[in-house]
Image (cartoon, rainbow, N blue to C red; front, side, top):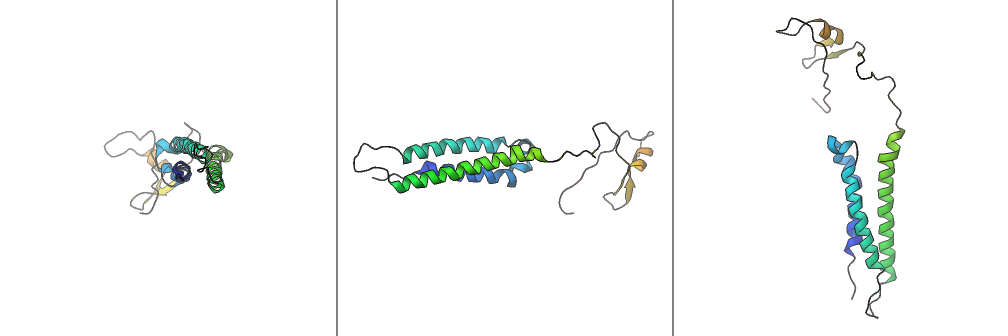
Length: 156
């Protein structure tokens, strides 16, 4: 009797979904953006399922007439290889290639005064940094010590 090898298919699907979940979903949340721990956890589960599937594909049966077919061995080995390649490429891309990005040497350091610039505020009026730091805010007598800039992503 032939057995359906569900662990190898589940392991492949889980590794494929975990590799796509990081760039399309998990990168949006600060908790999972810096280190892809959720994807790595899913990859570990996928590797366990792949191992179970490979053991199942190459298992010897007690029934002499029901031996594993060559096609099931090739199928399981191919899916395991593809899954491991997906996992390897994902880990290489996120953990190794991300370190190859050049440092931002021109960016201000922590505590360093930012260069003067001007931007449009929410009402479209041009406001410069020196202007904000030189005049007191409404209801205060002294000018502020700093300015907080918020950049909204997306469309207005």
